[in-house]
Length: 114
Length: 115
Image 1 (cartoon, each protein chain N blue to C red):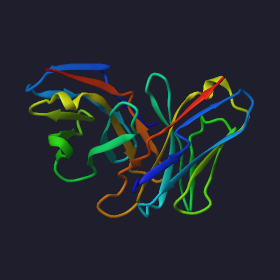
Image 2: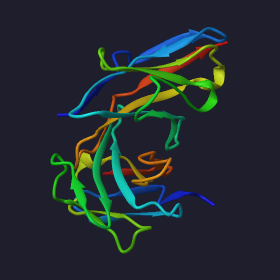
Image 3: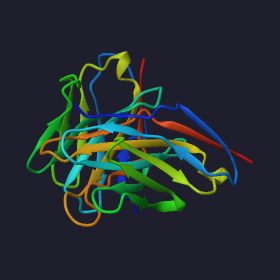
C-alpha cells in the first residue's frame, strides 16, 4: 500500500533562515512525488513535482525538493524563508503502476517568524 | 476565470438528508478528483475519474457517489448524511499526459456541516 509520512506537525523558522519540511514515502513502482501548499480557507496549490530526471527539483516561490531514492525521501527546502511562506504543506505520492491513486501526507504547518 | 470551481462554498444540512456538491473545470483536463479534508486537515482521496475509469478509495462509504455528465464536470452526491461527513470537500483536476501530467488543480473547497 502507498503511504506518505511527514514526521513534523509543525516547523518554526525565523525569517531569512533556511527551511526544510520533511517527507518520506512508500509506493509500488517508481514514485511520482509532489508538494502542495494550502493557505487558510483555500484549496491546495501545486509547488513542484518529481517524476524522473534530476534529483533536485526547483518549483514555485523559490522552493526546491530533493528526491532520495535510497532513503525514500522528498524533503522540501527553501534557502531563505519569508513570513508569507507560513502555510500548511502537503507531500503527495502516486505510484507508477497502473491504477494507483494519489496519497497525501498529513501536512506540516510552517510558521515563519519575523 | 476560476480554473476549478465548486458550488456551494458552504453547505449546512440535517442528518439523513441527501445533498450534492458541483464541480466544474475549464482547463480541458481529462481526470477529476474528490477529496475530503477533516478537521485535523488530513486530506483523503475519495474518487478519481476520467471518461474511461473510476477509481474508488475502498474506504469511502457507498453513500457517496460521483456523477460526471461530461468531461468538465464531476459532481459529488451524498445520501443519508451523517455527522461524520462534516468536513471540507475539495474537487481537483489534472491531465494524464504532457508537461503538466498529474499536476492537480484544486477548487476552493466546500465546507459541509451536518447538524
